[in-house]
Length: 204
Image (cartoon, rainbow, N blue to C red):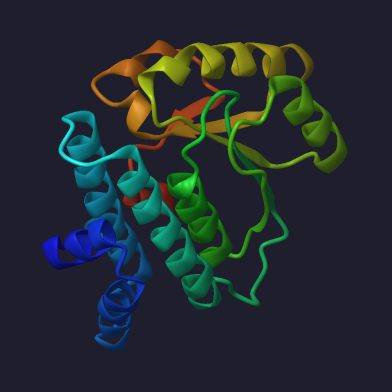
């Protein structure tokens, strides 16, 4: 994992790609690659940025390299066996970190769901309009920064007014350290701490 992290910090796309290709050749499951390699490396880089060890430019470079890798890995996750179910996935307004949401989208695809990945910073009003149009079985919302919790609460409250039975999955680093307990008494909301837990959501 450290080799991958170091290659990301250096912006070495070739080395990063070779590490992932080797894991795929060794038949390491996609979820393990996402959780144990990519996620851990990005969290480590985030910690280094917060402590001033690397610049924001380096953090952005690492994120760009990972997004390119995820685009390549997409072909390894999409299945032709569709469940007929649909998910809309978005980062809440103000939230610009979308890589975790991309990996969540891939897990939905792996399990045969049709997905609408809306990316970062989606205003609540625009999200509501999209839900009206697509009528998804599940809405997945992501936050990386604790600061974004206020937008998550605001978005959920607005959605509940119009769609009180909408199933909402929430996740992301911003909900660590007990922050997800804010939503524990809402039966329509399910906190997903990692991709392994998400994968069990599809088990019938």
